[in-house]
Image 1: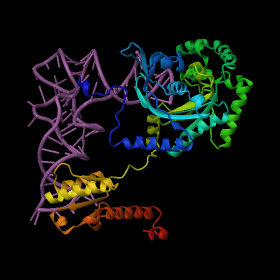
Image 2: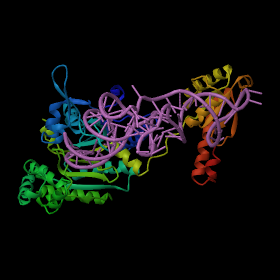
Image 3: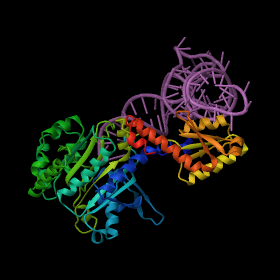
Image 4: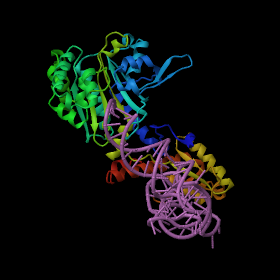
Length: 446
RNA sequence: GUGGGUGUAGCUCAGUUGGUUAGAGUGUCGGAUUGUGGUUCCGAAGGUCGUGGGUUCGACCCCCAUUACCCACCCCA
C-alpha cells in the first residue's frame, strides 16, 4: 500500500552514514587500477537489446529471462545493461579504439548492472560491479595481468585470507566439440540419475552439468571427463603458461574443472575469486578470456580478457572478515555561537576556515550552547570553540579538544593558522601514539 | 519461476491460555540556576500492531487471503 515509500524489490539504499564504505572500496579500486595502467571507460546504462542478445548469448539465462527490456518512444528495444563487457566492446568498436589507441587496450568501469532475478543475500536486481577489459593480445601474460588486478584489489582491501582463486580452461571453439562429445558420451550412461535441468543442459551445453549443485548431479559429475584433457595443443600450451606465470607471480590458485562461467562468450582461461562468507553467492569476482566476442559483435577478430567484481559482495566480505577501516573522522571544528554576536562570529570563522580547506560545522537550528556541544560530539568534531560577546570583544577564544577536554587559546584574527597548528598537533599526537610514542625525530619537527 | 521463514515506535525487540489506556532498550528533541559534549537523572514526541477479510461479547495473539522483506533453489557479480 505505502508503495510510494517502498523501494523496488532487489534494490539497495546506501545511507549517508554508510556511503563512506562504498567510497573507500571504489577509491581503493581506482588507485590499484591506475597503478596497473587501466583507464576508466564510461558507457550508457542502457543499450540496444540486440547487443546483449548477441554479446552475452541468447542461450543464457541472463538474456532469456533476466533482462530489463523496454521499448523507447521510438519503438526501439532497449535493455538496462545486465553486465559490462558487451557495452564496453561496443564503445571500443564504435569509437575505433582498436585502430587508434595503443594496444593492448586496458579499460575499467565501475557501474550498476541490472538483472531481473529474485533477490537474496549478495544478489540484487540492481547491483554494482567493477570490471576490467584488456583487448588485443592472446598472450597468457594478459590473462595473468588481469587476474593480478583482481588479486591486488582484494589484497589492498584486506581480503587476503578466506578468498580463493580458482582457475580453469574451457578451451576454444576448435577443441570444445571433442570435449562436448566426450561429456555427452559419459552422461548418456547416467541420464536417469541426472536432474531435470541437466537433461536440458545435456543438449544445449553439457559443460553446465559440471556446475550443477544438485547432489546427485554433483556426484556423477565428479567422474566425468576433465575438460583439460581435451584441450587442443594451443589451448593446453596457453593454460600451462597461465599457470606458470601465476606461480611465478606468487599468486596461489587451485585448478577447478567445475568453474564454467555462465556467459557464452568465454574461451580458454576462466577464473573466479570465491569466498564462503558471502552466503551461497560466494563468487566475488568472475571472469576470463573472450577471444571470439569482438568478432562476434562485428569488429575485427580481437582477443580479449577481463572480469567483473561485485561491489555488494565485496562489501559483504569486508564486513564478514571485519577488515573495514575506521570510519572517517568528523569535522575539524564545530563553531558554537552562544549569543547573537557569537553566532555572527561563528558564521564568520566557519566561512573563513572552510575556504581555507578545513571541515567546519556550525549550528543551523538556533540551538542552545549545550545542544550545539552535543551536536559537535555526535558528529565527532575534533575541536569546538564557543563564541559569544566576550570572545568577540576580547578577540580571544579557545579550541576545546573534544577527546581530551584540553583547551588551546587562540586569537580570532589568527584563526586560520591556529586551526592549522591545532590539527597538526592532533595528528602528531596520534602518530606518536600509534608508533608507541617517543619518536623524537618527528615530534621535534613541529 | 519454485520452496521455507518473518512482518509490533526511526532501529533492535518484548507482549502471559485471546481481556479493555500496546511496552522496553536504543535513537531523536528538550530539561537538570545564568555560555560547554561524552557518564547519570527527568521529560516529550513517535505505533490505524504490514494490508484486507473471517471467528469471537472482545483479536497484536486464532483462521484465510494478500503484500513486503529475508533465506535457500535456479542463475551469477
